Length: 575
Image (cartoon, rainbow, N blue to C red; front, side, top):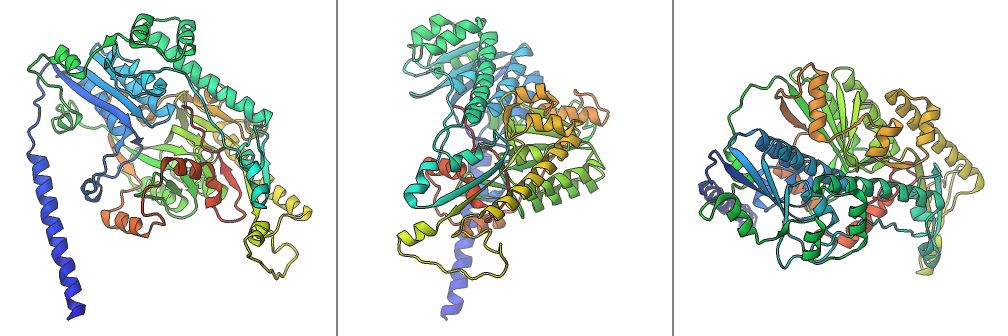
């Protein structure tokens, strides 16, 4: 009896869960919609994290996954710009957890809406803290308001770097780092106690570029001189009155007051969810079909994956190969946009994905769109495209390779663990975690890495129509912003994901104004697969932010021993 009772109970609970889910869906579907009439105003709540590709399956919705995709927001803003029923937008901006490239794409979409002649009002609702990124997005509006008790500190940018060199001696670990490229500072993370001159030069260059982009954009939108904006930022925290007097904001309001000013006391702003369910009629049938392939996360061999309990993504070479092959064979797809958001990873996996892009490129055009980060292996996989677009604040380049090998024998002995090794072959212990490289092994490792670097340079040179010497001059592990990458030839032009789709239209002989159907790859996994992955995950709870940040910083330890990496110098975040 015990063996049959368990399945029955399981089926009973499954049936109850199904009934509850159905009821929940009915309640959602039965909610009344705010009607969209001529002269309507939309309300966008812009904040949090905007993922590149968000699962929209039943499992995600039942578990309350509130993630939003960047492309959905961008498409809604573009649709609203062209929708004759919409007269304006109120955008509440608060607590953004995105990089500068994504922020620039959102800001550009808002700016495009405003440039169409429609009204755009921003409402910055932040607690105490640096609001530079939120203000940057909001400054696209013709009017910027903050709540009376709010706090909007525009204090500039900073970047923090982690150095673990002083840790190893305390743990009795011998850490050997081999890197190809003077600026390949991923090695500095493991091998140094402080910044090298080359690393500092690169870091200052990146910060100068992004800060300049911020200053020029705010000055243009607010009608201020760039020097005035810099002086206002340097002054640090300011009162709401001082911000208004300086021209950075237009005053203080409660959100309800802003809403009443736009639609009247009895009116209501239309939410994006209501707008999505009442789209404007299509003026024309799609003239073509464009596939968007998302390449997200650390690059590894095997299948792509994502954790339901953390924000860690893996771009698997096998998954990407299958996606490019499927798109190449599909006669209904006219062009491909490869959206890359990756700090790199395995050099081998990067080359396998590069090969997949080249085989697909022989069938149809491939346009790369770089998100917040497309560096090292993330640039490698993009290098062979027909055209590359990046946002001004994208972090890219980092053409170089690195390898870190720890010898933990001393640590093990310190805690009472002893090891013994037996080998056949003089260099059999080259990947051992309890032995350091000897001079012969070190020379062989460096030779292998130089070979990988040479291949990396050749891939870029062939894709960008540059000489190997020209690539090496801008390589050496150096990271560039998208703005800088255009100047040195690593990127064709500045633009976001929607610009890349427009570029794909032109590649197939269409006008930018013509509509196309967009389909997304890799194909979404079903909820059963995603649940199984969650149950098999090593973690059962979402890790705290500080731990996730540390894991990103030391991502190289997630690779097999002895892996040669095309990896960014940590994950650089500019706040």
